[in-house]
Length: 183
Image 1 (cartoon, helix red, strand yellow):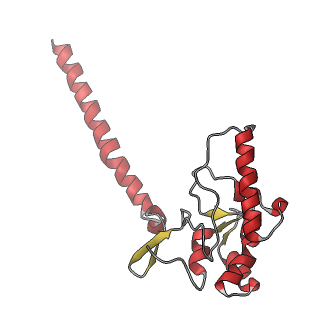
Image 2 (cartoon, rainbow, N blue to C red):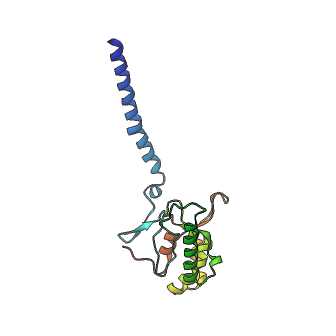
Image 3 (spheres, rainbow, N blue to C red):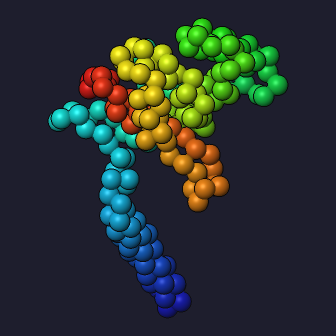
């Protein structure tokens, strides 16, 4: 019977130590580390006055108006060899080419395919450049001003070679003279 109570006490101590370590110390450590860059840890929120206008980590969902449009949302689970996926990509390519007044072959791949999460805020500099003339015209700006805004909102590859350059479409739209309204 003594062995039983000794094992029971050892199990209780083990559970108590796990609760303390995993339920208190670990969350406190993660919270403490998040305080190093609190904006990032809390979603990099963008406010327009008192109104929450979005997050730099999520696309703003603009699909009409005088703004830069993000990557396609609502991707399917079609395989790379699926004819349905090919049809959808070609349809998007044609729609974007028509909207931007460009040849279908000039539409970058990221414009017609989705990201892993479907809500990433980044688009390629090529897709931003494709949209620049339309946005400049609709915002009443010249194209060079828009290109300057694109460069200002481009996040370059880490260390110059890890990853690819990406334009944050959410911050880019907020930098326009007539940004999307806060809803």
